[in-house]
Structures are given as C-alpha cells and as structure tokens.
Length: 370
Image (cartoon, rainbow, N blue to C red; front, side):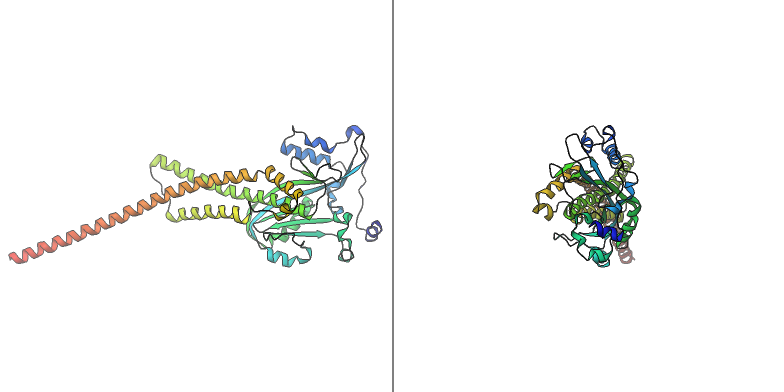
C-alpha cells in the first residue's frame, strides 16, 4: 500500500512534534460537565490543532489529521478527527438530476429511503480506484462525503472550510427555492478504535469506535433535520409575531383591517410548514439503518436527544396551534362581516321594493281618483 501511494505521490505524512507530558491534552478531558457547549467546541478544536498545518490537510485522510495519545499505562492509539458541516440552502433539491450528473460518485443506498442520496468523492485517480483499493482502510480516509436531502439540506464530511463551497455548488445546480441566508452548523466525529464502548457523546462532537457510510447517513440525517427545523421554526415565529401585532391593534381599536386573501395566504403557509416538517423531513419516520443495527440506533437516539428534535417539534406544534386558533377567529370575524354585508344588501333591496310598491299604489290611486 505504501509503495503504491509513493508511486503516485498521493500522500505525505505530517510530522507530529513531541510534547511533554504536562503539555499533552488528553481526549477524555473533553467530557468535563463544566464545559459550555460552544466554548467546548473551541477547546476541542485546540486539542486537534496541536499539529502545525494539520487542519489544512484534510485531503490526506478521512480525518483532518491523526493524533496519538499516551497515558501512563496505555499504549499509543490513533485518533482520527472528522469535521462535519451541515447546511440548509434551499427548500427543495432535485435528487434525480443530482444523481444522474454524479452517478460515479453515488454510494449505493442501504435502505429504501428516497429523500436523500450520499455522494463519495476522492482525489485518487480512477485507475487506482479500479484496481481494488476502494475497500482499503487507509484509503478510506482520503474520501470526502456529501449527503444531500430532498428538503434542502446538505451535510459534508471530511471537507475543509475552504473546500466547502465547491461541493455546495454541485448541490446548488439542482436546488430550487435557494435561501437568501444559508443556515450552517458545525459538528465533529472522532474515530477512536480503542474506545471501550461503541460510542461516547460530547459537546458538539461524538466519539465512535468506527465510522462507516451507515454511520455517516445516521449523523447526516439528524443534522439535516435540525437545520431544516430551525428554518420552519423561524417561519412560524414570523407568523406568530404577525398575529401578535394584529391582536395588539384589535386591543386598541377593536377592529382589524386584514384582507381575506392575506388570511388565506397565512392559512396555506401554516399548513405547508406543518406538512413539510412531518412528511418531507421525515421527522418521525423509522430509520431502517437504526432498525437493523442497535449501534446505529444508539447514535440516532443520542443525536436526536442532543439536538432536542422532539422538544423543538413540540414547540413548533404549539406555535402552529396558536396560529391556527388566531386564523379561525379571524375567519369567523371576516365571515360575520360578509354575512352582515349580505344582510344589509337584502335589507336595502327590500326597502327599494317597498318604495317601488308604494309608488305604484300611489300612482294607481291618483289615476282612479281622476
């Protein structure tokens, strides 16, 4: 393997400087409950930025780089760090056209789910890929993964910040309803083969015994749903704020001036948001990968709890019920206005008919008297 890499000049192993025992940062220190979520992320970044220029060498592995840790009575172990970047960039992505354009990079699906595709990119020449290196463990770390969801999310694995845009451009060509402000979230996966358990959670990262394509799919599904849920929560918050303003005006003036068309638009927006969250995001759909393997089920359950998907959906549902209550109230008010208008129309017509009848009677009386 090393001879083959040297032949094509594909990799260069970064030199890891030696550190004294006192200056070495151990991975288990990250589990301190006193660390805040975001500050722990920066602390975690410092742990894996100990090697000079290592953060810029993602192409040399599935991880940004490899770190070796030594405790007093333990042997050296290799820990691989995988940066993860999640984006919500549009309201819809055409997966069929995306798959057709990148057919050679598509990973065969491991479930019947149709709302996403997983792409695997590599810097290795196709000649090497064709001679059986695809299953090599070392070669596996040269891959970059992009998981794209039909509802508009894209999750990137093992891709540096300066490389992200070129992969997002691949997705944007097949996206519709691009957002003016793209949402982003950063996460990390640490692969630690010597981990005593299958997984271990952390603040803005997760440690796994091993990371494969099914693990990538599970992690991407939760990150993608979380960002999309943020988008829909923001839309519902805007509707709640709009109805709050209407209620304040009604409190002061006893009236409101919303048009029927505007109200129907709000009804449609509320219904479509709820349908998108439940149906398109698949927030409550069963994961076949997790169903078949308890290890992946553990990852899925942990991440859903970590990102509070159920609680956030409950909050969204509560706000939608508030919006629905206000919509029903305003619909009744507009309906009553329309009924009052019809009643006044009937009264006016009856009055006109009475006037005409009286005129005819008066006219006939004058004719008879003359």
